[in-house]
Picture 1 (cartoon, one colour):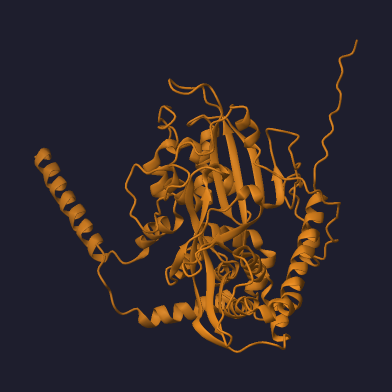
Picture 2 (cartoon, rainbow over the protein chains, first blue to last red):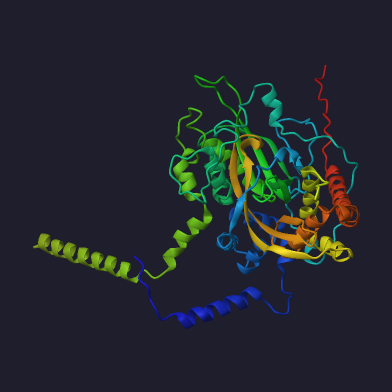
Length: 364
Length: 152
């Protein structure tokens, strides 16, 4: 039970003033701007956009500044900001096959139509701290190479053509039916894959990473291969009512991961590979990979697999993957529970009194 | 008024306007002399569009997350209605895009506006894209296999 307590107004005001001073830090250093955060801490901005479920680099960067770099607090601020805006409608589904690629790799096929490009990646770095960044970060310009116009179709399409993998549309509604929207309709389990994907896309990276990891360690084994990871810009199109036709409203950066998993077949399906799908705003590769693993694990029921592990438990995963919900409930424990605790205290005292009396009786 | 452009033409220029760097768009538009007068039908307003994606990239749709969008509608003194929907929160970008959309529907303005605004924006977009593609192409992996033959 929470009982309102008055009397802390001045303390709260002053705490917020202190917070503002702490946020500013040492005033002999330059104040950091959201533009600097957006440019130089870009992956942090991407994470806040992803988990805040709102694509807006400027707002995410501002949230990171306001939250003093506390990412979950920043996600919370973005989610709160989102609720103040009206929704104009739903976009046409993005076409990730037509992505303007900045990174594309496959761990299943060496030679792909369109080739493998590493793009800006931490992979193959030595993870040694670079002291050069302490004083100067004017790197040499990126290398250039001749551009090829080869298309970059989805890698798993190669397997699909041979019938060795389930179709991309498996496990969901028909391709053009209206998908569920958990921001409009309350969740009621079990949910379809469309709603699961929506929730996972805004889910906490750490939580999904741990669950994805658990599937590799034997809790819901499903042998994932990274069929394809691609990062790049995709066009967003929208059909305004007043126009009645689709218009491109701009481009957004997306990370997409398609995992390929073993499947031994069932009564109705021959042995073939299955899919797990992960996607995020911005460049959030770890998140997209983890999401793909968890998406695949949650398809256990549909694929006639035994549900034995946490990652396969839809209600458990979806009820706990949202870090704003999670932090709200955990952090509310900081608020005064004085009356609650008084009654607990009374109870413990009474029990001890009774036990003490019992003991005395037994001794006599 | 006979319409001298197709829906596809209009989609093309609206895409160029939406994608344009806001600052460049603003500079080109303010440098354009032969502007008609515009009246606002709907003041610039920022809201959200829920972005949809597809499971497996090409399967069933799902709602992925929202993006900020700013829209604006204007009517020109020659009676053309211009609309703009632009990702982000830049009200000036949306207003300029709506005004130019109205202007481009005017046969007497189309050629000049296209030359003064759409072409340079398209060119800037193409140049930025080529630069990006060149940098990405330099990170392409050229696999080669080491032959590890058995000793005989």
